[in-house]
Image 1 (cartoon, rainbow, N blue to C red):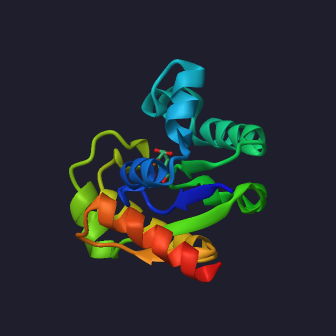
Image 2 (tube, rainbow, N blue to C red):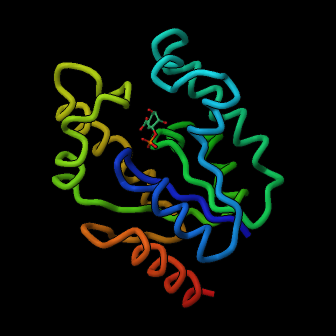
Image 3 (cartoon, rainbow, N blue to C red):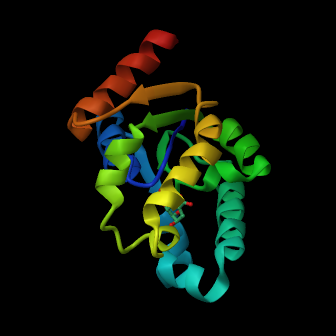
Length: 168
Ligand code: S3P
């Protein structure tokens, strides 16, 4: 069984994913890191020199490869749900866990972010609001939805385990 953490940038997928993997004694995989290591450059540079579509193709190719992993927690990039073919693959790979963070909290966390290329423009607030409108329903299709706010990553990770255990 694998668990895929999905949700907006800034939701804490990587940090919480690491904790979850540790608690479950699973492997941890981060799709952004896998792509950066494979390409030998940062996500920011991939967007800068190749454009968003090129990055999305890399995400799709990576998901193809992840079809065979076992007992892993996979933290995904926030836009991985945008392609329908990715959604189908995510569903096959494991249980999707949506880390749901209130929009105001995300705006707060990301307002000074300089590492995420999609927010690196004049109006990151508008970009985020549009993303919220475009993506919320896609994330809501997850098998498990965890409302997070100010709790510690460890607490959220144990909430995920509790919720998933109660469902089985
Ligand atoms: C993106 C989110 C980023 C990264 C890329 C695009 C998005 O990952 O994949 O900058 O479209 O939301 P995080 O969600 O880990 O920040």
